[in-house]
Length: 328
Image (cartoon, rainbow, N blue to C red; front, side):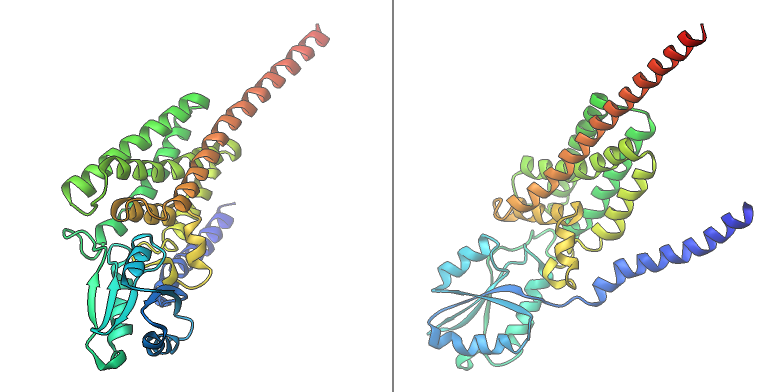
């Protein structure tokens, strides 16, 4: 038995290390724009050259056309596109939104200004929705993904290991998530100044992100036993965190990694937090629903697991009573 355990450890450790390197290093090494939504505004004749230049980056951009700068700005503020090239008689202007992704904003500047602009004019860059002045690179926001995931995993594991069941477990998970959300908002918004939206909306987002993970951990553990903790932790840490695109953008990750990441709590929470903090809630419905489903299904599993356990105990007791009666 000891030899088998030794072999299991010898094989398992390198396998986990390889898996971790694949999950974290591969998306980072393959970061590049893939159908990145980008607007082009102005008369068709004036924007033709710009569109032709953008198409030379094959598969990099998904071009959205707008009549003028006002429409392009509205699209950026609605999170329909990450930026836009506006061509007017006065020359071209690149509109960016570093709040959506500082990495994408820099990438667009390089892609649009690396060659002479349409008409030979100098490209002017305007940051329509800037990141916080205290966190211009978005480092604090992207760094919040891992602590929130860890907090959720720990909270769900603690509730499970302490033996909390049913309503008591649900209450502990909800209150714990609310407390994490308030503390995280106090640190990221009030102290670091990395967030710039409504404080309560940000706290709610951070709380929901934590609850989505903690409820999933406790819920699967209630149905499958302690092994459920490891399963959710694996999915969240080895897939959700590196696939989140929090430090760049989902459209910069290899396909289908970016899409998968948005269906997992870390990616959905990063997207929702950006929308709530900098875009007045624009495009928040999708990630909010994703986190809500994770939380609702997890809490439902907690209650279901307690119900099944109670029925099992009741059935076992009834069987024992019948056995004793038969013996008597």
